[in-house]
Image (cartoon, rainbow, N blue to C red; front, top):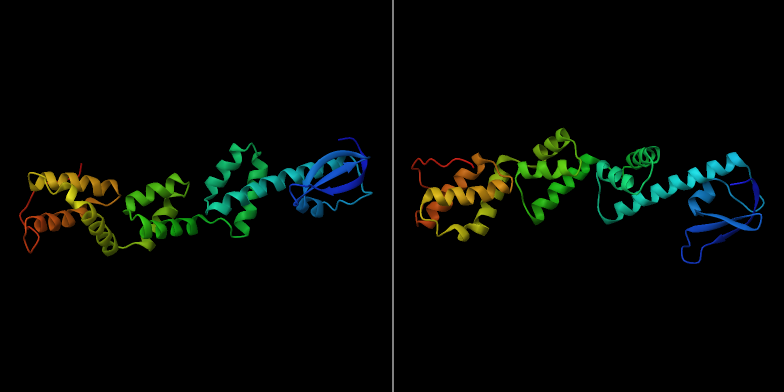
Length: 229
Protein backbone atom coordinates (compact mmCIF):
# COMPACT_ATOMS: atom_id res chain seq x y z
CA UNK A 1 0.00 0.00 0.00
CA UNK A 2 1.24 3.54 -0.73
CA UNK A 3 2.00 5.86 2.22
CA UNK A 4 -0.96 7.81 3.51
CA UNK A 5 -2.84 9.15 6.49
CA UNK A 6 -5.65 7.37 8.34
CA UNK A 7 -8.73 9.51 7.81
CA UNK A 8 -11.31 7.33 9.61
CA UNK A 9 -11.79 4.09 11.53
CA UNK A 10 -15.24 2.51 11.24
CA UNK A 11 -16.47 -0.57 13.12
CA UNK A 12 -17.89 -3.08 10.67
CA UNK A 13 -21.67 -3.46 10.65
CA UNK A 14 -21.78 -7.26 10.73
CA UNK A 15 -18.71 -7.89 12.90
CA UNK A 16 -18.19 -5.58 15.84
CA UNK A 17 -14.74 -7.05 16.47
CA UNK A 18 -13.39 -5.68 13.18
CA UNK A 19 -12.66 -2.15 12.01
CA UNK A 20 -12.45 -0.73 8.49
CA UNK A 21 -9.41 1.49 8.04
CA UNK A 22 -9.71 4.39 5.58
CA UNK A 23 -6.55 6.05 4.30
CA UNK A 24 -6.74 9.39 2.50
CA UNK A 25 -10.51 9.00 2.31
CA UNK A 26 -10.51 5.54 0.69
CA UNK A 27 -11.02 2.11 2.24
CA UNK A 28 -7.65 0.45 2.78
CA UNK A 29 -8.22 -2.73 4.78
CA UNK A 30 -10.11 -4.31 7.64
CA UNK A 31 -8.40 -5.24 10.90
CA UNK A 32 -9.43 -6.74 14.22
CA UNK A 33 -9.79 -4.55 17.29
CA UNK A 34 -6.81 -6.43 18.72
CA UNK A 35 -4.64 -5.43 15.76
CA UNK A 36 -5.88 -1.85 15.91
CA UNK A 37 -4.91 -1.58 19.58
CA UNK A 38 -1.63 -3.45 19.21
CA UNK A 39 -0.48 -1.30 16.29
CA UNK A 40 -1.73 1.92 17.83
CA UNK A 41 -3.93 2.95 14.91
CA UNK A 42 -5.77 6.26 15.20
CA UNK A 43 -7.27 8.92 12.96
CA UNK A 44 -4.49 11.11 11.65
CA UNK A 45 -1.72 8.54 11.93
CA UNK A 46 0.62 8.45 8.95
CA UNK A 47 1.40 5.01 7.55
CA UNK A 48 4.61 4.73 5.57
CA UNK A 49 5.81 1.62 3.74
CA UNK A 50 7.34 0.07 6.85
CA UNK A 51 4.21 0.72 8.91
CA UNK A 52 2.03 -0.82 6.21
CA UNK A 53 4.14 -3.98 6.11
CA UNK A 54 4.05 -4.30 9.89
CA UNK A 55 0.29 -3.72 9.97
CA UNK A 56 -0.44 -6.32 7.29
CA UNK A 57 1.79 -8.86 9.02
CA UNK A 58 0.18 -8.16 12.40
CA UNK A 59 -3.30 -8.61 10.96
CA UNK A 60 -2.33 -11.88 9.26
CA UNK A 61 -0.90 -13.14 12.56
CA UNK A 62 -4.08 -12.12 14.37
CA UNK A 63 -6.21 -13.95 11.81
CA UNK A 64 -4.20 -17.12 12.39
CA UNK A 65 -4.60 -16.68 16.14
CA UNK A 66 -8.35 -16.23 15.88
CA UNK A 67 -8.61 -19.29 13.62
CA UNK A 68 -6.83 -21.37 16.26
CA UNK A 69 -9.11 -20.09 19.02
CA UNK A 70 -12.18 -21.02 16.98
CA UNK A 71 -10.82 -24.55 16.65
CA UNK A 72 -10.40 -24.77 20.41
CA UNK A 73 -13.95 -23.57 21.01
CA UNK A 74 -15.35 -26.87 19.75
CA UNK A 75 -13.03 -29.24 21.64
CA UNK A 76 -9.45 -29.55 22.92
CA UNK A 77 -6.83 -30.02 20.22
CA UNK A 78 -3.31 -31.37 19.98
CA UNK A 79 -0.45 -29.31 18.61
CA UNK A 80 -0.50 -31.48 15.51
CA UNK A 81 -4.19 -30.79 14.91
CA UNK A 82 -3.71 -27.03 15.27
CA UNK A 83 -0.75 -27.04 12.91
CA UNK A 84 -2.56 -29.19 10.37
CA UNK A 85 -5.74 -27.11 10.33
CA UNK A 86 -3.87 -23.81 10.05
CA UNK A 87 -1.70 -25.24 7.30
CA UNK A 88 -4.82 -26.23 5.38
CA UNK A 89 -6.08 -22.65 5.76
CA UNK A 90 -2.91 -21.53 3.97
CA UNK A 91 -1.22 -19.80 6.89
CA UNK A 92 2.55 -19.66 6.51
CA UNK A 93 4.89 -21.68 8.78
CA UNK A 94 6.05 -18.59 10.71
CA UNK A 95 2.48 -17.68 11.60
CA UNK A 96 1.66 -21.24 12.62
CA UNK A 97 4.72 -21.52 14.84
CA UNK A 98 3.90 -18.22 16.49
CA UNK A 99 0.33 -19.32 17.20
CA UNK A 100 1.40 -22.70 18.60
CA UNK A 101 4.01 -21.10 20.85
CA UNK A 102 1.48 -18.59 22.16
CA UNK A 103 -1.14 -21.29 22.78
CA UNK A 104 1.43 -23.40 24.59
CA UNK A 105 2.58 -20.51 26.78
CA UNK A 106 -1.02 -19.75 27.75
CA UNK A 107 -1.72 -23.41 28.52
CA UNK A 108 -4.38 -23.64 25.83
CA UNK A 109 -2.75 -26.67 24.22
CA UNK A 110 -0.95 -29.47 26.04
CA UNK A 111 -0.71 -32.90 24.48
CA UNK A 112 -0.36 -34.61 27.85
CA UNK A 113 -3.54 -33.00 29.16
CA UNK A 114 -5.29 -33.77 25.87
CA UNK A 115 -4.34 -37.44 26.16
CA UNK A 116 -5.57 -37.65 29.76
CA UNK A 117 -8.91 -36.04 28.88
CA UNK A 118 -9.28 -38.30 25.82
CA UNK A 119 -8.79 -41.41 27.96
CA UNK A 120 -11.22 -40.16 30.62
CA UNK A 121 -13.88 -39.49 27.99
CA UNK A 122 -13.33 -42.90 26.42
CA UNK A 123 -13.70 -44.60 29.80
CA UNK A 124 -16.98 -42.78 30.39
CA UNK A 125 -18.52 -43.25 26.95
CA UNK A 126 -16.85 -46.04 24.99
CA UNK A 127 -14.13 -47.89 26.91
CA UNK A 128 -11.20 -49.19 24.89
CA UNK A 129 -8.04 -51.06 25.71
CA UNK A 130 -4.54 -49.57 25.90
CA UNK A 131 -3.60 -50.59 22.38
CA UNK A 132 -6.63 -48.88 20.83
CA UNK A 133 -6.16 -45.80 23.01
CA UNK A 134 -2.54 -45.52 21.95
CA UNK A 135 -3.48 -45.73 18.28
CA UNK A 136 -6.21 -43.12 18.67
CA UNK A 137 -3.92 -40.69 20.47
CA UNK A 138 -1.15 -41.14 17.93
CA UNK A 139 -3.64 -40.52 15.12
CA UNK A 140 -4.34 -37.16 16.78
CA UNK A 141 -0.64 -36.36 16.73
CA UNK A 142 0.24 -37.21 20.33
CA UNK A 143 3.81 -38.41 20.63
CA UNK A 144 4.14 -42.17 21.21
CA UNK A 145 6.02 -41.72 24.49
CA UNK A 146 3.52 -39.19 25.83
CA UNK A 147 0.63 -41.49 24.88
CA UNK A 148 2.27 -44.48 26.56
CA UNK A 149 3.03 -42.52 29.72
CA UNK A 150 -0.48 -41.10 30.09
CA UNK A 151 -2.08 -44.48 29.39
CA UNK A 152 0.14 -46.11 32.02
CA UNK A 153 -0.83 -43.43 34.55
CA UNK A 154 -4.54 -43.60 33.72
CA UNK A 155 -5.10 -47.35 33.56
CA UNK A 156 -4.16 -50.50 35.44
CA UNK A 157 -4.36 -54.24 34.73
CA UNK A 158 -7.31 -54.47 37.10
CA UNK A 159 -9.20 -51.64 35.40
CA UNK A 160 -8.38 -53.04 31.98
CA UNK A 161 -9.73 -56.46 32.99
CA UNK A 162 -12.88 -54.89 34.46
CA UNK A 163 -13.56 -52.88 31.31
CA UNK A 164 -12.86 -55.86 29.09
CA UNK A 165 -15.36 -57.98 31.02
CA UNK A 166 -17.95 -55.20 30.94
CA UNK A 167 -17.69 -54.84 27.17
CA UNK A 168 -17.69 -58.60 26.63
CA UNK A 169 -20.88 -59.02 28.67
CA UNK A 170 -22.60 -56.39 26.54
CA UNK A 171 -22.03 -58.38 23.36
CA UNK A 172 -21.66 -61.97 24.53
CA UNK A 173 -25.12 -63.00 23.29
CA UNK A 174 -24.01 -62.34 19.72
CA UNK A 175 -21.63 -65.25 20.06
CA UNK A 176 -23.66 -67.54 22.33
CA UNK A 177 -24.59 -69.85 19.45
CA UNK A 178 -20.97 -70.70 18.70
CA UNK A 179 -20.70 -74.47 18.11
CA UNK A 180 -17.76 -74.92 20.45
CA UNK A 181 -15.54 -73.17 22.96
CA UNK A 182 -12.73 -72.43 20.54
CA UNK A 183 -15.05 -70.77 18.02
CA UNK A 184 -16.65 -68.71 20.78
CA UNK A 185 -13.27 -67.57 22.08
CA UNK A 186 -11.91 -66.85 18.63
CA UNK A 187 -14.84 -64.66 17.57
CA UNK A 188 -15.42 -62.80 20.82
CA UNK A 189 -11.68 -62.56 21.38
CA UNK A 190 -11.19 -60.94 17.98
CA UNK A 191 -13.89 -58.39 18.84
CA UNK A 192 -12.23 -57.53 22.15
CA UNK A 193 -8.80 -57.24 20.60
CA UNK A 194 -10.18 -54.87 17.99
CA UNK A 195 -11.27 -52.74 20.93
CA UNK A 196 -7.65 -52.63 22.03
CA UNK A 197 -7.54 -55.28 24.76
CA UNK A 198 -4.52 -57.53 25.02
CA UNK A 199 -4.76 -61.28 24.60
CA UNK A 200 -3.66 -61.89 28.19
CA UNK A 201 -6.52 -59.69 29.38
CA UNK A 202 -9.09 -61.25 27.06
CA UNK A 203 -8.35 -64.91 27.77
CA UNK A 204 -9.70 -65.17 31.36
CA UNK A 205 -12.72 -63.11 30.34
CA UNK A 206 -13.48 -65.52 27.51
CA UNK A 207 -13.07 -68.54 29.77
CA UNK A 208 -15.40 -67.08 32.39
CA UNK A 209 -18.12 -66.17 29.91
CA UNK A 210 -17.95 -69.52 28.15
CA UNK A 211 -18.34 -71.25 31.51
CA UNK A 212 -21.32 -69.07 32.34
CA UNK A 213 -22.95 -69.86 29.01
CA UNK A 214 -22.51 -73.55 29.75
CA UNK A 215 -24.11 -73.10 33.15
CA UNK A 216 -20.93 -73.71 35.14
CA UNK A 217 -20.20 -71.97 38.39
CA UNK A 218 -16.46 -71.73 37.84
CA UNK A 219 -14.36 -70.90 34.77
CA UNK A 220 -13.39 -73.91 32.70
CA UNK A 221 -9.80 -74.78 33.63
CA UNK A 222 -9.42 -77.15 30.71
CA UNK A 223 -6.48 -76.16 28.51
CA UNK A 224 -7.42 -74.95 25.06
CA UNK A 225 -5.54 -73.90 21.99
CA UNK A 226 -7.05 -70.44 21.57
CA UNK A 227 -4.54 -67.91 20.30
CA UNK A 228 -5.05 -64.33 19.09
CA UNK A 229 -5.69 -63.81 15.41
